[in-house]
Image (tube, rainbow, N blue to C red; front, side):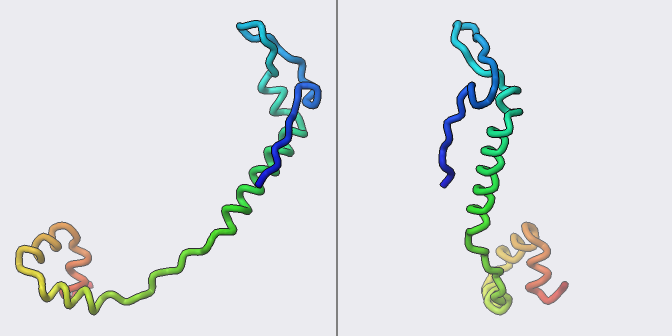
Length: 99
């Protein structure tokens, strides 16, 4: 997990600005141009990427379902086959022996 660092206006060397309510805020451009801030953001991004890459790689589905699909196709009624032909002609052709 990324450790949270508190970065203040003094650390960013940014002069505080006044907003409409009279409170002081930092200009966004000065804040993002600060090397400490950009280093923190880059570190957070790299740690996030590394954490995402630690996941489990999905395994390819290499099972051959063709025989089971053909058995199911043989049990289909004419109406079901027609529906398959209209909805997914590539699968239909594969099941009837075409390419």
